[in-house]
Amino acid sequence: MSIVKEYTYYPGCSVRSTAKHYEESLLRVFDVLGLKLYELEDWNCCGATLCSSVSRLTSYALAARNLSRAEREGRDIVAPCSACYLALNKAKEYLAHDPEVRQKVGRALAAVGLRYSRGVRVRHPLEVLINDIGLEELKRRVKRPLVGFKVASYYGCQTTRPYKEFDDPFYPESLDRLLEALGAEVVEWSLKTRCCGGSVTGLVEEVGLRLNYILLNEAHKKGANVIATTCPLCQFNLDCYQSKIIKRYDLGFSLPVLFFTQLVGLALGIDEQELGFARVMVPVEPLLKSMAAAAEGGARVHA
Image 1 (cartoon, rainbow, N blue to C red):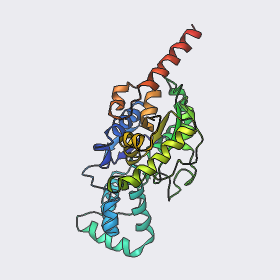
Image 2 (cartoon, rainbow, N blue to C red):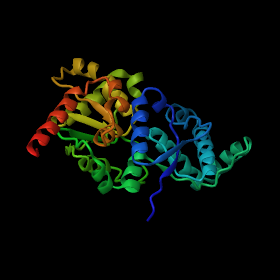
Image 3 (cartoon, rainbow, N blue to C red):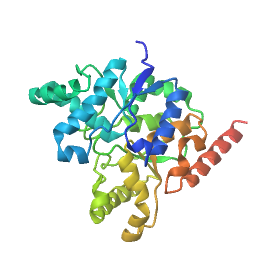
Image 4 (cartoon, rainbow, N blue to C red):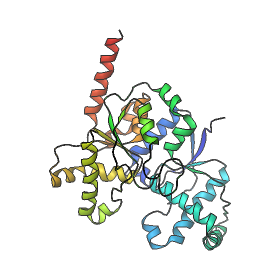
């Protein structure tokens, strides 16, 4: 079966702002693997979170505009942000099964010269790597195995739920298998899809800090020395609020929180400066030094 290597790229708002290191690492990884991304022309907000809480119909219309434009380009659409990925798939679901939503959104699209026939597939970068490249090929391409990385794979609550697109909604394992193929040790923990609080952390900080403390503490208890995530908001909450969490709950540790694409890029031999490591708040340098030392030790053994 031939591998699909061209995709329409829907950045979404987060990867152009607080999650810039997600986009930096994603673009470099896809480029190295020969996966071509064509940015969706004139894309708009996916309609997630705040918009959907005010008007679900407006949210669906915003997502449908992106879907209709992507559909004209004839390629699968890749959405790295978990909220965008969910919002686009959710709009697809309602347009397919709710006649009233389909009719009203269809009229809104027609008013701007667009139409949507539900023919575009929305995909997450994790699923693309797993299914279009494959674990064996990724393993073959590894230049710097992730030796010393004990990773807690954190999917958050939107990447695999509620739609079972490519993994189990409650205990997914695709990211675990990917990281193991790259040479990392993946820890077993039960909170891989537990919510980080999302935007609540910025509104009711005490609640958000508590939710993120639970995640950090459990990952540490299970032996993780780094958390890998697929979601911009999860990464932001766990990383940027971590100093407050450490102070409030008197934690005796800190955990770097990285996007999974940063770890993939590292294993593929991409320069760290191109992967956005300098943008994370909790330093990852100790892990990188440990990895380099392990590589040097292995080289001496085989010399």
